[in-house]
Length: 388
Image (cartoon, rainbow, N blue to C red):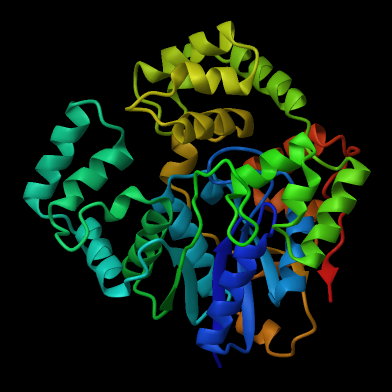
């Protein structure tokens, strides 16, 4: 029995996601499709536009059989650890294949890059240190150092989906898994400000929805996702970023120098800069703008802010075990499903019992999303498993 695993955010689920899911399913012909979904807070440290349950419903309508929430301590991470947590979770749930997109859909080359990064030769390590000493951020420095050893495509790691693809392959190798990788060509332009109907940039799509550019945005969504997005916006169940600004600045201004120093991936100097920026700026975007540099990309600063809000410290992540249980958000009636995840305890609703066992960071993430979206106290315990 083949079980296809996909790692996704689906915020919102658009036509590009639908194409990816269909092409992956056509390549594998699986008995079930499992999705590991980012929860209330996503990989770049920002709040999801739509709730995890709304996004899981859209995925189910598009062909997924079950959707699980990836724990936030693995979601709010750099690409390497984000991929490690998601791949481990899908494997424990019974996935036999892993599908992912890449701008360079050359599996042998991506595998070569993964092996190179997992076991870098001494000259590459030296080149990486030199690039970091010159003030490059880690992703750019790694891309430059690895490029010299990838003559087929020296700029392979300059593209975001290529980076994630390589990280998925690194996770499979590091965990010694038998997962079969399935690479799907990524089309469209990741950084485009224009919403391309067939392959939109998710950030451009979210921006259009927040601006009320409905015709432009909805043209990029499959019918079921369009219905879910309309319903969500009409009900007002969307985070108000002004509330997030208030909560974030209040939290950062209440933190001590020692609190900032305990944040993960926050070297000396950056902790002081973040503390000063929080005292001078009153919005999240202003904080990011003040601190984003060549060395410290916006995503890294955003994740630091998210970790501060969720109480995630370097100590939290240092001894973090791989995901050992999963919150099920949505499921179809598929007899082959439950047998595949017998090795991973599954909670079927975000009831108080799950929140108590999930850990403080996940509780904080759901509470933060609910607060910013104007949900009543007790969210997400009021949410029900999506079925089809």
